[in-house]
Amino acid sequence: MSFMQPSPVKYACSCGILNPINKLFFCRHCPKLRCGFCVCHEIESHFCSNCLENIPSSEARHKKNCCANCFDCPCCQHTLSARAATVPIVRKPEEPKDGESATEATPSPKPSAMPTTKKMYYLSCLSCRWTTRDVGIPDQGVATGTWPDKECLYQVRFNTLMEYYQSLVLQEKQEKQEFLRRKTPKQHKFPSLTDRTGLTVSLIRRQIGWSDKSIPKTKPINIAAAEASAEVEALPEAIFTQPINLRNITTVAQRHSQPADQPEAVSKLYPQRRSLWIKRSLRCRQCEHNLIKPEYHPTSIKYRIQLFASYHVPEVVMVRCEQPLQSGQANAIFLKFTNPTMYDMTISVLDVAPQDAQISPDALLQACRIKEEAITSSPLLKTTGITLARQNSIREVKREVRELANATIVPLEGPFVLNQRDDSKEFDEDVQAPTEEPKFIVWRKGNKVLIRLDFTPAAELQSGNAVTLGFYMQYTYVNTVSNTPDKKEPTTHALYSRIFIEAGEIANAKAN
Image 1 (cartoon, rainbow, N blue to C red):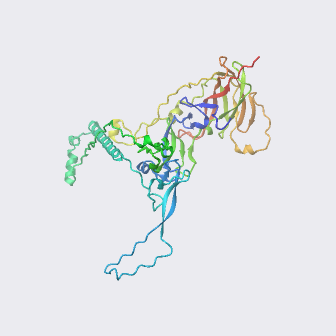
Image 2: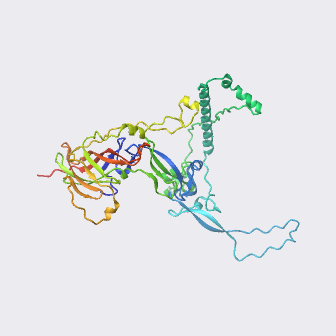
Image 3: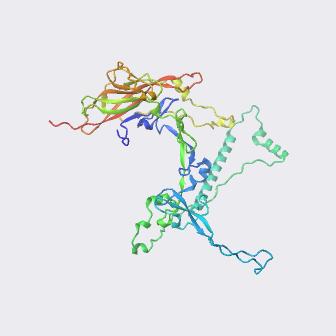
């Protein structure tokens, strides 16, 4: 199959979505396949893709997720480069010192042969040759950090709205805390009325000389409501008399890159700060363990934790069909199985879900246990039921795969063993001794096996309809992660995956 074509072999995730194996993850703690919708996405770090500067989350939020030194071209969206240019400087005449007259001052020196110059910088695009001089931005004396930003016309309105909603949230938070304080009963054995009214604390503070402690109540800022206006600016008169030059009018992409003002003319485009990129980590929703965790430094492309499904689950590759597909006629398909782990696997191809492939309830409960205890001993949080811990595991809802197979497979005669992965055997020239293999195995080499699977497409399929095979692949997986402190040795699980294969389309019937 071509690299650019979609994979004909798809695995069913635990949530019922079909994906190729290169888009799935495998959780070793609750041994199941996970897709992009079964995991929680968390941001690890922010960085600029151009200068590779690592920026903390608080600073990135303050800078509106933009880099302070890198800019994008407003015309072609490429990165702008700083260019240097020499500018001549006019010398000012020397002023007389204090206590000296203009006649007594020393005469001006002779003009030097070499004029004085200063290095100035401007931004230029190496793709479309756009420069900051085209829009009248003055050159700067420093290459980075001094370029001005175009102010938004509605920035004052946005700041006022932000302050209003911040004060509103703070007021609601104070009211909620005051309500919880009044509602929560006292936890000590002998309640005191002075503690309830706060007289004891107030008296002690006055004896010490402190002022009474009180929470200031904030009031939301009063802002004027926005009013809709039916008045629209009139079109310029030149639009009806002069021809339109499309080179001077901005495109939709250029306007969307500057949503604050959305300029209509190319001469009003200003450079935009480059948006920051992120490194994200993926966490299982069921047991909250990390599946993908990258390195913190932006120049590193390695992972500290990488639980891709292609490293733990046998890979199935469709090779070819034995004959052209015909509805109702028996056929065979050749499939290649690859073992990516360092342990031998026993694989079975079944047409129904195996009954003994479930993991034990105790192991699943221990791996996906729900932590109900809080991380604080505050009686207020215990009585109200509020915890400061992470939102723990979500009850998993199993969904059936909606895509149904339209072909009937013939299960294999029995299971077969898939050898462990050994990279040194690929360079070994020793000929393996012939061993007795089942009839459905075509060839075996290292950790790869090619099998022949018989199937029959449905009789009601017509010419041009796609044929989809569906079967259950049961395999043994050696888990090296211990869910309990007592078990330190690897445990073997019998897992299974639902696999769907697009074998092709029904061929045209042969003419008699």
